[in-house]
Image (cartoon, rainbow, N blue to C red; front, top):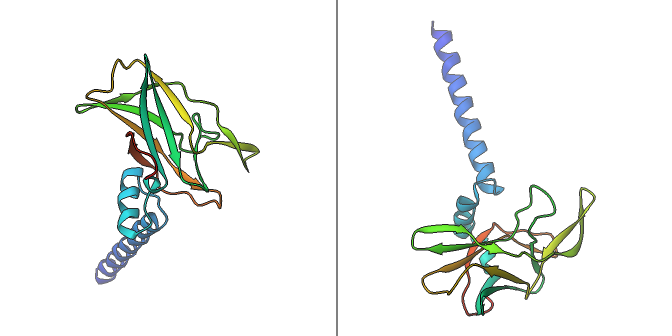
Length: 170
């Protein structure tokens, strides 16, 4: 009986240790959900994609143009993303507490020169314009760009939601 209790305690200890190691690895290597990863990276001083990407918006008659402002040496994935596991740049509209995908005409990406799984990764760089349709005005709405910034050196930051303004770089 004593051996069975000791065996259970050892087993529980191993399970607890493994859970702690897994939690540490998830936190340390960014395997958390995007929202938690962004929060965690800000706490650790790494930051997120909003440090490299901002967006501005302008009404052009019946359409709206969203312009990406991306710091030199950085880019974001095109939409659609070149590979399933890459995070595409998307635009959504927030009105009150509702959020929905914008009717965006995503432009084709540019070749990044980076080839993964035999595909040349398509990206957007600074001054990429994403036209939107279906908005009569910008009053009472927020245009939100969801993007993941990656450097030309291969470092990718956690994705971020960036509210488009009339400004430029972050």
